Amino acid sequence: MKNRKGFSLFELIFMITMIFTVVAASRTATPEAMLKTFEANHKTLVSAYAMHQAANNGEKPKTLGDLGYWIDGGIDAIQNSPEGAVYTFSDGVIISTYTDPSGTVYERRYPSGN
Image (cartoon, rainbow, N blue to C red; front, side, top):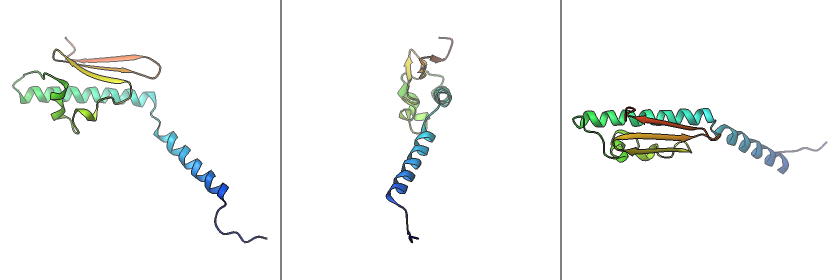
């Protein structure tokens, strides 16, 4: 009987492959998680909009960038997150649009009366 110490090259490569597979599978975002991220980002923008108005005597923000002060990490923290989401600002209205992997388009506006 052979006295072996350690692992063979094949065993090491197999284990490394298994570890990478598990890590890759755990990092894949599900469509439901991506939609929840989109909804959370829109709510963050709405909160920032309200804080901007409260701090500026009811004045509406002029650009999406004006809301960055009220968002932890600035406006860049939510831009293009999740993949397929676009956040724009037009005439005092936040327009959040998200296209999920299946092609379904979701749109949220705030204030919604405009």
